[in-house]
Amino acid sequence: MAARRDELTREATRLFAERGFHGTSMDALAQALGVQKGSLYSLIGSKQELLYVTMRSGATAFHAALDAVPERAPAAERVRVALRGHLRVVSEQLDVATVFTREWRYLEGAHRDEIVAERRRYEDRWRALLREGVESGDLRTDLDVGAATLLVLSAANWAYTWLEPGRDTDELADRFTAILVDGIRGYATRA
Image (cartoon, rainbow, N blue to C red):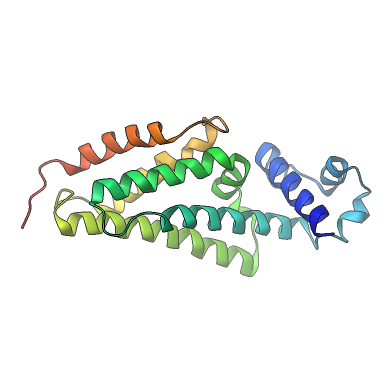
């Protein structure tokens, strides 16, 4: 039963990424699994629940990528490792990343509240990473941390639209970092 539920979740994630949440019917999910529509309800309560499971998977993957950032490294290195992790999640879990980035708006109730909180927490972690760089003098002291966070995450999140699955993203993340950090490092002052 657990293996079949995992298969349903994978197919739902794939279809949500391809067609969107509203463009994916329970009939389409049943067809993808080769079962009758009614059989799906023995595996999952609703399409909303499938969306939530996908969103949890995305939140877990993106937070795990940030968990791997070394706490004591200089700011530029931390940004580089964080971008590597983010783009690696997108590349290795393209469907999950697509759904996490694009379809969260269709969650309802407590599930929506939870995922919105996870998305905010992820953004807050990036904001803290950049703020620490400003406070240490590794990044420009006049950096607008909020705007920089939005810029970094907007660029990294948009990767789901053009990044090819399985692509080695470390070099790409390093290029992003060079552009972003060199652009925001500027004339950093040390105390």
